[in-house]
Image (cartoon, rainbow, N blue to C red; front, side, top):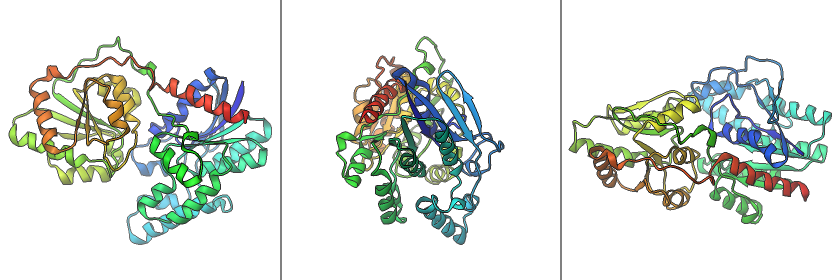
Length: 419
């Protein structure tokens, strides 16, 4: 049995897509001959909005949980001055926050006061002084964890693996903030990694271009769904009112306006229609709520706080239609699509990404793709007045299970260790 030290910032009980990925490794790696030890932070306060993530943890000591699947070590979280500026919108605070964010990325190994995540590094370092690990795995973002892994790798002569859940300097480039220096720091950090993995093909392509590695040597490990949370024998009744559900994050580049315009066309033609559109968890992203409200005043649109994953699944199963938003400008694979597939409920993709989402959904008999408002309105009218067209399709393919994707990840990790 090989031993892996996993550095993960997001991790349960914090309910985030970023936390589900390392949690699946923790659950299933042992099945492939790798014993995981996860080092994360305490998530012991209620998280109702982004700013809550920067509040200090209640627990001020490091704790250890030894369970059948592996070990979880949780370190205290201490916010930095930059963290305390989160949520402030005046020009000076925003400027200093951006400056400190950049300095945190490039200087935190030398200036501990800039690094609110340093307890994860210190905990991992102490652990490696006490026991030997065969590999270090860091999942980002935050990508400072890659820097931790690279430092620990050099100090203890242990190979390390960097897992990209998202882009690093490519995200900075999109915002125009310190992109050049961030790109240099990224290349310098990951050059010592024995293996880099990603959550979508577009990231593999970008990383290959940045680092000079071969794209096919940067495996894509999809997020997937937890199969045990979807029991096809459980029958869940649909909501009494026609319901459209969107789950989780809404990104600025996703074409929500196309859907909202189509919804308005439908309402203009059918003003008496009784239905609801629920954006589950979007209260966590007030900017996106403002974006929706600024584009549509439809009273049928509702927003909720973050919810436990099990509750989200029940909301999906009881909804008539699941809304997936995308854009042809970004070929990303949003983690929610796998839960959507596992639920078996009909899926509406707006707009066509002309990429991986189209490829995944093209094999589903109850998935529909609309790329303009007129098509959205026509589709909504069709399924609203003929709800029998919206049928569940039992998911019989285990390709997208978290267990299967972890098995693929383990195979890549073991090969990296052998090298």
